[in-house]
Image 1 (cartoon, rainbow, N blue to C red):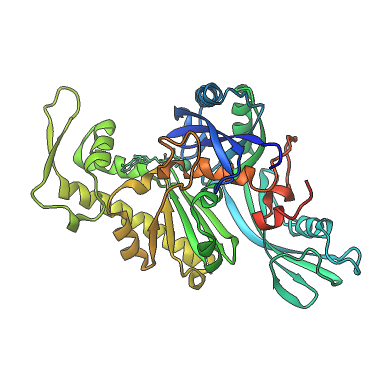
Image 2 (image 1 turned 120 degrees about the vertical axis):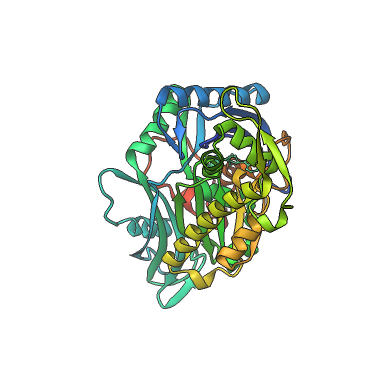
Length: 409
Ligand SMILES: Nc1ncnc2c1ncn2[C@@H]1O[C@H](COP(=O)(O)OP(=O)(O)OP(=O)(O)O)[C@@H](O)[C@H]1O
Ligand SMILES: [Mg+2]
């Protein structure tokens, strides 16, 4: 096997920041995790930086943990990006094929995807990803890998994801202040998909749903690539604040109630079960009916899956997702979510977390780490990002794995 490559990834979550160091290896995952660092999120709200110095301290803490366990100091990281400023649209590009006798070259694909980027992007937005959905070579449509095909005209259908420039700049600033440069930004739900979607789900059509603390990331995969993406500003924290408000509990008590006794499917909770939770100030313990708490959580779950279903319908790909919802993220640990998702959307549901991990994997086999682990897949599959200045488009990284693997090193 070639010389191992090492990368560091930073998942900027609303509740936690995770730094992982991965090294390519000859195992099922393709890499071993050799460094792990974590920090409770500060200065980050609903996936976005709201306090630069707090967030920087948090990034430093996570990076220091990863450095201590791996013994390696990162100069560049792959960083997740999320928040409701993310927007996506589909577009198409077309170019003449360079040398008709040798077939489509990588350069042709690159130029074609560049031309697909010719969409009106306002000054205050950046193109984050350009993901090829499929190609057409002359009259041959639905081509997945055009390289080497003979023809005169190459067309690409692409999914283009944009983000607010300021949101990206704030992340960059925090990274610089924490002593690292960002080689690449990866939209969180796309990273999670790398960790948990099966090839069959990607091919047949499935919706990746990452329920985090402050956001829920959605990525619809059809025919092997992402066709629609969205970040909703609803996450696990909303379930907690509903409990806190309705039952008049402090947030930390409501969070404990949710994590230890919460359920989102009331019929599965015996009606006579109660739990005692700490009230405000010197108040004695407050007695809460578990069923009542489940009714509150159920209402929020139904609303969240209602929003997801609305987004699926809005995308226009409603009928192309037979594999249903594949749900991950820390928020998916709430028991009863599967039933709520199934009943609200009428689709098949699979709850999942990162599998087949090698190395320092204690604690990482939770759905809360799908994004961080998926970023290692993203960065180590095919080629590793070359350190570069800010970019608008890097086809090496935005191409799906099958196409990236065809590229020369
Ligand atoms: N056992 C559990 N039951 C219910 N909810 C849980 C459980 N464990 C964790 N959670 C919830 O998971 C959420 C955090 O998930 P995660 O770590 O994936 O979020 P994040 O990546 O930090 O945030 P985001 O992706 O929204 O920016 C919290 O709201 C937390 O309450
Ligand atoms: Mg997350």
